[in-house]
Each structure stands twice: as structure tokens, then as C-alpha cells.
Amino acid sequence: MPDEKERRVWNALNSFRIELPSWGFANTGTRFGKFLQPGAATCVQDKFADAAQVHHLTGVCPTIALHVLWDLQNGESSVAEILSLATTYGVRPGSINPNTFQDQEYKYGSLGNPDQAVRNRALDHLADSVQIAKRLESRDISLWFADGSNYPGTANIRQRKQWLAEGLRATHQKLKDKQRLLVEYKPFEPCFYHTDIADWGMSLLLARAAGERAKVLVDTGHHYAGQNIEQIVAWLLSENMLGGFHFNDRRYADDDLTIGSIDPYQVFRIFHEIAFFEFETGEEPDIAYMIDQSHNIKGKMEAMVQTVMTAQELFAKAALVDHEFLQKAQSKADVINAEECLRDAFATDVRPIIEAWRKSNGLPVNPLQALHESGYVSQISRDRAEKNSAAISSYA
Image (cartoon, rainbow, N blue to C red; front, side, top):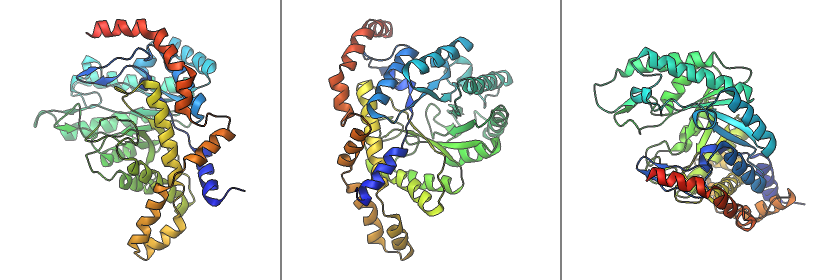
């Protein structure tokens, strides 16, 4: 019979699912440049194939997030292709991500643009994205806006807030069935004076203005250095407004490094706040977990598998916190024992239990090693080398 520790980890692993981003398999970089990889995905079929391989190795990634302009460029024909690829590769379409930031018209913003015609264009795109999500049976539409300004006095901040609220409300009215809007925030970049949705409070207010099926999306990289993200998570949970995460890590700002590579204890603390909320309330919040990283230096496939393994490990560690003991320690202001309760769980080596869980589910005990031994990365590097070489030539 498994002991209590094993039972907790086992139950946590059975419940954990994390979504893969289609763009995480393609060549990405910074605004300064890209270091292209021969095995990077060059089309949406490549992305589905790569996502399917990660899911095959880990067993916890059944969906792939899609970007409308990068993955669904041709309307109904693209939708039909995505549905066909989902059947072929056994990975379902996940969250749908509109794009209101890359076209030239959005130089001064999208929903916050002073030009009514540009605002209407953005609204039409959001409405199309909701319809695409419906056709793909995708629940969540994830919204991130690059809107803002770079210099004082160049934008009417209050007016832009009103336009954003109106636009989100109009988009919310287009939702079907159980669809949700997830409103993301970011303190800076590309705008360096003010960003229209700069923090969780702004996102919260705009989500509430949009409607009851709008929630806040927390990107762990979208915070100032040292900010207490788990406190934000706790507040959003208490307000029933936490909709999902984009997981990555950062040393300074939005570095988009692989999850847990800089501060694994922070990710553990986030997962703990969610588990503690469930313990105290008896409620299971509906939270979408997703990876959102720029694998610019690491190999795409290796980084994705490594990330999923890290997320599983930290989620499992959070399940080991003795919430009953912690609750009593907190009520007595027992600082040492309360802190040690978290530290003990974080220090526990859960890898042997995770390996046993994988084995019982017919999965590789070490997915990263299995990826190396499969030859998949070598194969896609050969198959895609010509296309990626052409991209390198055109980029140069």
C-alpha cells in the first residue's frame, strides 16, 4: 500500500495537465534577432507533430494553444486543417490567441487606438477569433494587448481605458456556450511609458467590465523583479477571477526562460497557494495551465519536455504541504513551523514517485532521456533543415 506522501503525489499527477504553445516549437527570439534551429517547426503540421511527441512522452499535454495569425491564416480552410491535424496527431486545439499587435495599423494600439477604424478592425479580429474557437471547440480565448504609449502626454490614458472596456465587453457578448475570455497583463514592452493593461488589478477591473465569463490570465514573466506573484494568485483566487497561467521564468523581467530555471521555489509557492485554497474552501478552481516560453538557446523539443517535467515535479511538491498543520501554525502565528512546513515539502525528492507513476501509465520513466534515444530531434532536424536554412539566409 502506498504511504500518504505517495498517495498525495499520485493524485496530483493524475489531475495535472499543461498546454503546449504552438509558437514554442517554431523559431523565436528577441526584438534584436533570432538564432534559428534546423529542427524548428516550419508549419502548423510540424507544430502538431512536435506537440504530439511531447504528449506521447509525458502524458499530460493533450492540447496545443494556437495563434490566429500564425496558425490560422485562411479562415475556414485553416479550421478544417487544424481539425484534421488534431485527429491525425491526437492533440486537441487548446486556447485561441488573437493577434492585435503585429500589423502596421496597430502602431498606436488596437482597442486603445485613437483611430476608430483601427479599433473596429481589432474588434472584428477578436470576433473572428471567438468564432474560430467555437469551430475548434476551444474554450478559452487568451487576450494580450501591446497597447500603450512611449512618451508622457501622447495618449489619453482614461479614454483608452474606456475603449478597452467597451471592446472587451463587445467581445464577451460574442462568446458561445462555455467559452471564456482570459485577459493578460504586462507592465512594459513594447510600450515604455505606459501600458494600457499593466498589472493584475487593471486586468481584473477590465475582466469584470467585460462580463462574467472573463477572467485574469497571469503570465509569470510579466511582473517586476521581486514581485510577490503568489500573493496576486491568492487574491485572484479569493475573488474568483483567476482564469489561467502562462508559465515561464525570468531573471530580470519578461525573459521567457524555461519554467523553474531561475526560481523553482516561486513556482512551487504558486502551486501551493492554489492547493491551499482548495483545502480551505473545498472548491476546485477552473485554472488553465499553459507554457509560454521563448526557447531561443535551448533546443525546442528538449526545452519543452524539460519544462513539462519541471512543472510536474513542482506541482507534486506542492501537493505534499501538510495544509492542516500549516493552518494551525498560521492561526498561532507559529512562524518557524509554518515556514518549515513549506520548506520540507519543497525539499522532498518526488522524482522516484513520479517515475513510478510514469511507469504505471506506460510512459518513459525519464521523458527527456527517451526523447534523446528516440532519434526524433535528429530526424526533424534533417527533414526541416532546408526550410530553416532558407529562413536563416533570408534573415541574414
